[in-house]
Amino acid sequence: MRLYVPATLDELDSAAVTATTATWTVPGRPAYAVTVALAVSLPGEDEEGLEWYAFLAAAHDSLLRVAEAPDGVRLRVVVTVEVPDDVVQTPRDAGTAASQVCVTDDLPGTQVVAVHVDEPDASLDIIDVLDAAASEAPDADAALDDAIQRVTDRDLLWYAPEEIAAIPRA
Image (cartoon, rainbow, N blue to C red; front, side, top):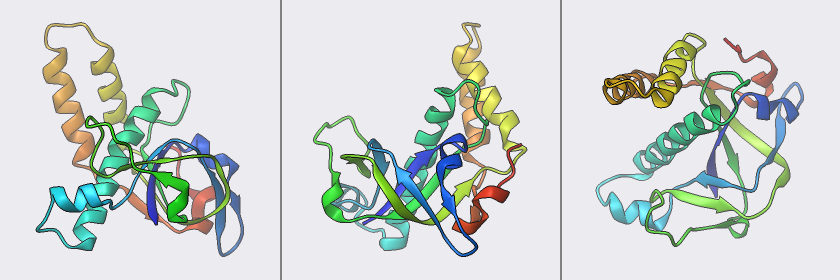
């Protein structure tokens, strides 16, 4: 199963990178994939479109991970990996995204397929999101909506697994 794992750049520091590949410990936590629920919710989408929706959900979740790491790099990260189907569970909670799955345990030594990261100047927009989310100003909701839109309008850059150490950190 192809997973899109929301992460932070600091979490990727533990990746074992060689000249041609990288392995990483996939944390036991929510990730995103093309699930039956996602396919049912988007009946007109092909496989590539479904993967895009799962990827976007992971990118959004990465923003939440960045918010939880106050000293971390302010860039979204999505790590793409392939794992056996039996190491993930589909949540039964109606409040979860249709593409959300849960990695049941840490998965050390997982081969990285690709890493997607915001371009370095996106950090300013991400800081704006975090500041607006923490603000109690009367216009904070509008500022938050604007900042989130600026972040979600950005594409994440693609990196090959062996390029992990070369990813700019803003």
